[in-house]
Amino acid sequence: MISLFITALVIISSLSTGFSQSRYSGKVEISYLYFGFRTITVDAAPNWRGYHLENAQNGIGINLISGFTFKEKLFAGIGIGYLNFDLNNEGINGICVFSDLEFTPPSYRKFSPYLNTKKGYSQLHSQFWNRNENRTGTALVELGAGLRHRLTEKMEVYLQSGILLSQQSAFFPIRIGVHF
Image 1: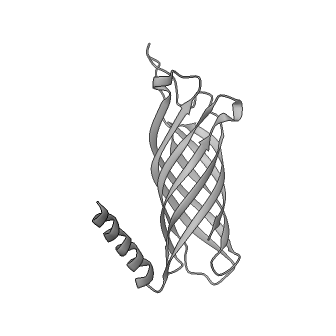
Image 2: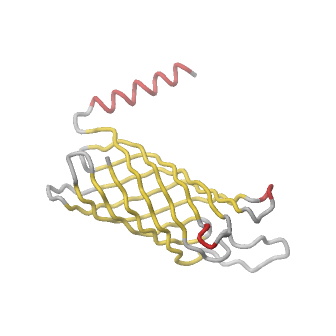
């Protein structure tokens, strides 16, 4: 196990120093998740517990992402996020884990467009459900586009929107973030 960890560490460090145009970078995002529509419709059966987000509520999220930027055009990383749909005091919140892939076309301007995709897993829980059955886990897929502004050589702020599919629902997220 230790040899596997050391091997992985050597590979990661050689990748980050072996290519002169790659560097470690991270992102912090804050988002508002506007509820769009349900992705499934269910005819209620006797034991059906209801939709994961019964009242079609909006939410907020915070993401921390760590990864590598290659040639200032491609970012690949993994992230963890906190989701909160408690805006109506229903006690629904949870976490998500995802991969993040971003492409920025070459540009020497301060403002530049970019494309982003996230794929992963989200799990919510509610204080009103039975303790043993209070979790709902689903896949998470997001496609987004945005505009970034370069503050310094290695720091950018960005605004992004798109579509997020998770928890039997589609959301239109509005994200503000810092890429460093």
